[in-house]
Amino acid sequence: MVRAFVKPEGDRLQLLVRVPLEAMRDLHWPTDEEGFLDLAQTSPLLPAAASLWINGSMQLLEEGSLLARPEVLATRVALPTDRSFGSYQAAAQALNGPALPESTQIPWRQALLDVQLGYPIRSELSQFSIRPAFAQLGMRVTTALVFLPHSGEERAFQFVGDPGLVRLDPRWHQAALHFVELGFLHILDGIDHLLFLLCLVIASLHIRSLVLVVTSFTAAHSITLLAAALGMAPTGLWFPPFIETVIAVSIVYMAIENIIGGDFRHRWMLAFGFGLIHGFGFSFALQETLQFAGGHLFASLLSFNIGVEIGQLMVILLLVPCLQLLFRYAVKPRLGTIILSILVGHTAWHWMIERGQALSLYSWPELSLANAAGAARWLLAAVILAGLLWLISLFLQRLDFQNASSRRTEP
View 1 (cartoon, helix red, strand yellow):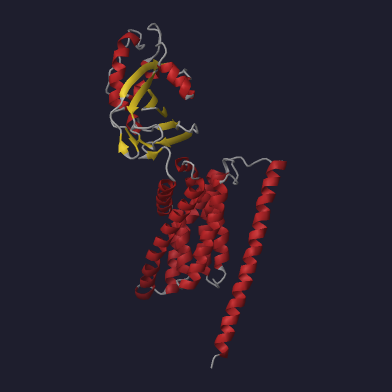
View 2: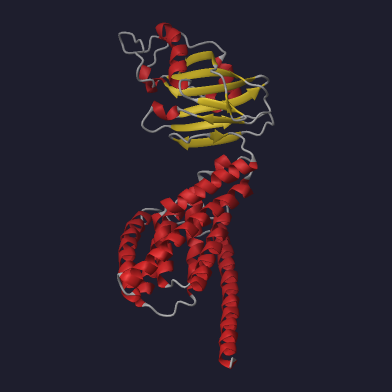
């Protein structure tokens, strides 16, 4: 676990970092006969350790330009019970205060290293970014970083491993581009969402029906993605595994429907219903990354959704010609649809069983007035959406009837 504070002050940017002493693997820390850290001999080694392991490959940028190598302003050994890194003020005060008494007995594997680095900057009002190198400190490194800009509005970040370049106070277009990329990569990494799209596509390769189905799916998951990002989704631990289980169920159902066959003219309504569920699945990935949005929440949500749609469109543009070639030269369309649906359904069935078993380990929410009110709100929203779908269905039926009538009346 690494804790850090970044604060621009005047012509200097302060970086306060706390890391476990044990993470600095190439250094031999002096100990006494009982195995406790020898603080008198350790203190002179701390600045070099900070320069090598903390400052060695980490980069800080001002307005996109790399800052010069910092000065190690202060170092100290801290006890594992020390709570000074709970705030920037307490951490700075501890670093500039008295060191631990040399008689303190502390096993070296439990000791913490606190470091204060100073970077020369042009202005405290500049835009700053950081490319941390803390992933090198261990097999799994979690970093909790707090940025304290001149405006006084703190921004907290938490990430595992190497997050790449982190813009501490991004402009709206920077946040937007970042979330477009995240949405695009998420749809490509989400094999369950891709299999659901495959089930939608193989049932009908006609452009009109395909556009209607995909648009319906897109509109639905956009609604629940936005609702979940705004804190309107259930917060219980049971909810994510429940959604993942239902996503697997949706793929199994669509695969079975493809195998049975029938009238797919109203499949857009089914795609809308399952799209609401898939939107919650997208939101789980988004929740961990909203910390990088800065003050541009709405732009980031919209951009993430745009990235998802770009990914979906690319997948569909690749799937449709491939399936058309397959059904024209390799296998008849009906047989090919059945074979592909069996393969997809078999995979999703195993997911459904595994996720259902994991879901059974969670406790369901207790029946209370607050939970009942929340369920009632979601039920009301579902009824309204169902009514809208019914009206749209009637409109499309009427439109199809008028088109058919006009074709019959033509000479």
